[in-house]
Length: 298
Length: 219
Image (cartoon, rainbow over all chains, first blue to last red; front, side):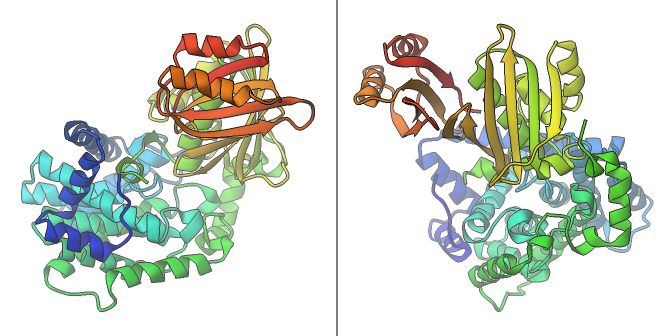
C-alpha cells in the first residue's frame, strides 16, 4: 500500500486521474493486491461500528470508569432536539454524536480509532451528520472514509498521530482535518478543496496541547471531540465557499510538526501540564486513584 | 501506516496504547506460552503502573491472556472471566531500567507447571513490541507469523532452519538471532509471510541442536 507524503500531491494526483482522494486511496490499495471487495467490506464494517458507537453513546450515555464523563453526547442531543442550540442543527448534531462516541470509548465500549481512540468521535460525528443531511449512500460514506484515511496517512508520515508525540493537534486536530476533507468530498467538493479544508482545521488548532486530567482519556478529550467535529464542518464550509489557506497545506503540516516537536513533555499526554496541572485536576486525580497512586497497586 | 491503521483498529476503549495494546501484548505472551495460562504475575512499569486501572489495562491484559481480541466487549469483564476460568492474576508495580513507559513483565504458568516470562511494551497506536522472552532479548511485534527457535549457538543452525522453511515454501520477511545473556544458547526469530505448517515446525523442533520451536501467529 503506498504511503502518501504530501497533501498537495495527493490532491493533484487524484485530480490528474479524475478521481476523488478517497477513490485514489482505494485504487492504490487495490493495485497493491488487496481485493477491492474485501477492502470495501472491511471499511463498511468499520462504518457499522462507528454507527453503533454513536447510537450507544446517545442512548445509554455510559459513565466512564472515573464517572467524570458519560452524558455529554446525550445532553447535547437533547438540546438540539429541543431546538435550544445557537450553532445550528448540523453543528450541534455533529458535536453530540462525536461526544457520544468519545463517551463510549471512555466507558470501555467498542469504537473505531480514527485516527486514535482519544479522537475517535470526531470523524463519525462530522461524517454521519453531513451524510444524513445530503442523503449520501452507504457506498459514498465508505469512500469518504478512504478520503479520511489518505489524509491521515499524510499526517502520519509528515507529522504525527499521537498526543504523546505532537499534542492534541495530532489527535483531535488530525481527526478533524481528516473529517473536513472527507465531508468536502462527500459534498462533491474537489480534492484540492478537501486538502484545503484539512489545512484550515490545522490552522485553527496548531499547538493544541494534550493535557488529560489524571492521564485518562476523559477530560478534556470528550468535549474536544465535540468541538472538533464542529470545527471540521466549519472548515469544510469555508473551503467550499472558496476561502483558501494562504500557507499551502504541506507547509501548514510542517508547521504543525515543528510546533509539536517543540512542545514540552508536560504537554504531550503525560498529565504534567495544561488542564491536567490545575488544582481541580490534581484533586480529582487523588480522588480517582486514591491508594493506587500513593502505594503499590493490588 | 496502512488505511486500516488510520481508520482503525476496531477496539475496546479508552486508549489504543493502554487498552488495545495491552490486549495484544498479553495475547503474544499467551502464544509464547503455547497453552492456557493458569497463573499470571504481571509487573507494570511507568505509565502502565500509574494509570492501569483508569485505562482498564488490567482488564485488557486479562482479556488478552484469555485469548480475547482487542475488539471483544468481554474485555470489560475480563477480570471476572479470568477468575471463573481458573486463571489467577496478580498485578504489581515494578521499576525497570531503560524501559518504555508502557511496559509489562508477564510471567505465565500453564497447568503443567511450565513457566515463561515475557517482557513487552505498548509502543503506540495499539502496536506492541516484546523485548524479552525469559533470558533472550528479542524484538517480536506480532505483525507477522513468527517462528521462534531456541537452539545451541553453533555454526549452520540458521541455515538448517531456513532450508526447511524454503522447502515448505515459506517466505521469510525478516530474521534475527538473539544470544542469551550467558551460555551457548541462541534464539532465532523468523518473521514469515505464511504460517509454518505443524509438521515443518515439528521437524525443526526435532533437530538435535534445537531445544524448542514455537510458532506465534500474527495478532
